[in-house]
Length: 291
Image 1 (cartoon, rainbow, N blue to C red):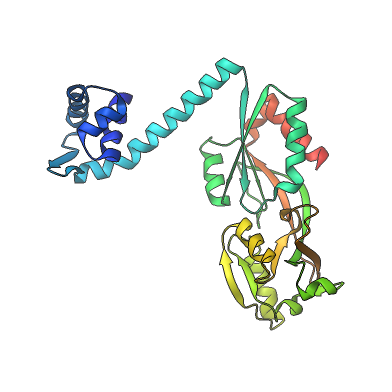
Image 2: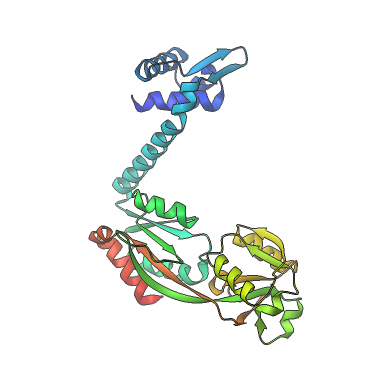
């Protein structure tokens, strides 16, 4: 199986015909057809059926498509890293950030770090914690910054970076702007904006049950920016980590949740063998010293 065969196969999948796939890949149609025929011989069956409307995947084609796409993407990423390294002499470091980790605390750190280590290229990838940890395990990430409810065991190592409290976020026009402190009970009377990616969701649910508090979720979103936009529009109030909020914002106000106080701990998570890279050692050392 050769990479150009996989590329031609995916082109037919995406464009629906051998003719359009050949145009897209800048190859003569007989050459594309021959390459796919060789791929079919190797895999043991036809990958496409043809009719007047174009090409459809066979059962075998549908079976192999996801793996062939994965192979193609990973190969492209490897080539890109190699080209970037050889041309720019840069060392790419991939850092995964959990979706609820705000940029306020980390962005200035990464700016200083790149000034001090200009030969190191940083890639910041934002996703959910389970996906990031899977990528860390497969070697696609060097480091994950997250707020796990439970510390991970072997083979991972977790280094505490900082602690942040939860705040009640609301519009500058909201009545909460007149209060000096806000309790969980106060939020009960307001439309609540539910952050679906909140890692303390279970803890919050337990606290509400113990205190017989019912938070009415007027809106839900898995995107922090959407929650903030709804706060700005005075649709409701939200409980958010303090460093998720934009610094010095005029239209979004907040108070620390007074009763109960809720906080989370943010960690750098990595495999110990990654410390063999001097650039990783420098990154983690700087994170722990400056945050």
